[in-house]
Amino acid sequence: MFDRYVYKFINYLQIEKNASGHTVTNYKIDLREFSESIKDKPIEQITHLDVRLFLARMKERNFARRSVARKMACLRSFFKFLYREGYIKANPSVSLSTPKIEKKLPLFLSIDDAVKLLESPDPSDDTGLRDRAILETLYSTGIRVGELVGLNKEDIDFISGVLKVRGKGKKERLVPIGDKALRTIRAYFERIGVSDINEKKPVFINKSKRRVSDRAVRRIVHKYIHKTSLNENISPHSLRHSFATHMLDRGADLRSVQELLGHANLSTTQIYTHVTTERLRSIYDKVHPRA
Image 1 (cartoon, rainbow, N blue to C red):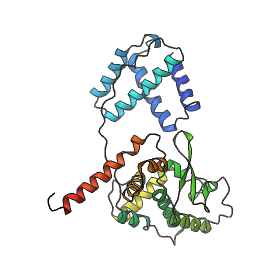
Image 2: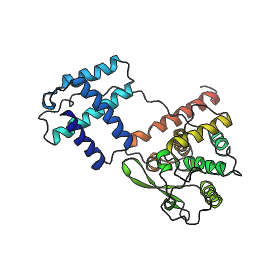
Image 3: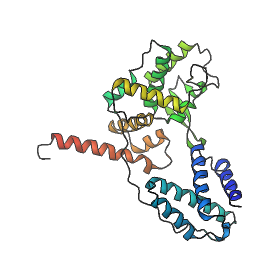
Image 4: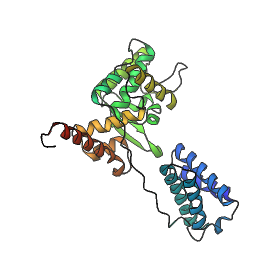
C-alpha cells in the first residue's frame, strides 16, 4: 500500500517538478528505508512520532547530519504532497526541525594552479586536446559536470560566445564562455573532423564516438591533478568553485555569479563570500603591521 503512494509521489517529482535523476534516486532510497521503519503501517495512521523515531534511528547509526537533513527534506516533501492531494488528513512531518549543518568552505584552486591544470593536457594528442577543451570549458563557464556532458554542438554559439546549458530540473540558461575555451573547442572539432557545428550531437565524445560520461570527466580531472601534483582532493566541482571564487575576487557581484552558476537561491551562492572573506583575512593577517 505504501509503495502506491511512493509511486504517485515519484511521478509528481519527475513530471511536475522536473526533479533531477539524482534527487529521484535518493528519495526512493529514503522512502524505502522509512517504509521498513513503519512496518506496513497504514499511511493514514502514520504520526509525527513514527517520523521522529525513524530520524532518531538514523542518528543512532551515526548518519551524517547532511544525510539526515536530506531524509527529513524527503519526508517533508512526501507528506506535504500526500496532504495536498487529500490522501492523508494531517501532515506528520509538519513539526520537524532541520538539524543545523556546518557549511564546509568549497575547495578551489588558485589562479596559478588553475592555469597549470588547464595547460597540462598535451594538445598535440587527440585525447589531450579533448581533455584540455573539457578543462577549459569547466573553468571558463563554471558549469556542472552533468551540464558539460549534456552539451550538444548546437548549444555552442561561437559568434556570441555563449553556451545553452540544461541545468537541474531541466532548466535552461545561457552562460558566457571565454575565447580560450572556444578556441580549444574549435581546434578539437577540427581535429576530429566535425563539419556541422549546428547538429544535435554531443560536444565531447569518447573513443567509441559516444558522449563522455560524468565518471569519465572525473577520471580526466583526476588524471591531470595527479600529473601536475596538485591537491588530490580537487574534483571537477572544484573548477566550478574556482570559477565562482575568482569571479568574485575580480569584482563580480553575487547576483551575477548566482545567474552564471544556475543557483535557484542566492543563499547557495553566498558560500563563496565566506571563501573570499577568509582569503582577505589571511592576507590582512600576513601584511598588516598591527594585525
